[in-house]
Image (tube, rainbow, N blue to C red; front, side, top):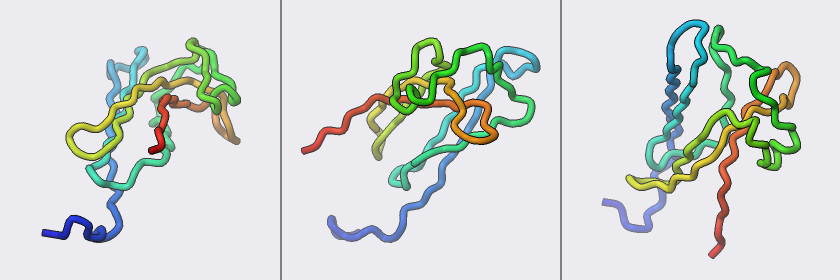
Length: 128
């Protein structure tokens, strides 16, 4: 057994598990997509994610108004551009802190992009 203040044994692993669930899983149907990214306890944290939808899984880009880039950067997208929700769990062990947030359809930010998805999780860190 290691001493209580022993240094870490090495770099933390980064082994995320990703799952996608489409419902209904039917051609030409309005489908909701649930994406889940999980990390094992005490692993390196997730900093960002680039997601490309598989061929054939299309969104109707004109069905929801886009949030402007400046509003997206400020985390201030209007309700009509919301396309989903998110639950971010932070912390190790069996009882992490859960922070709810919203997912918005937003304007593209770079060459070749058709749109972006902006995730807003309002949270404040308190200093000690």
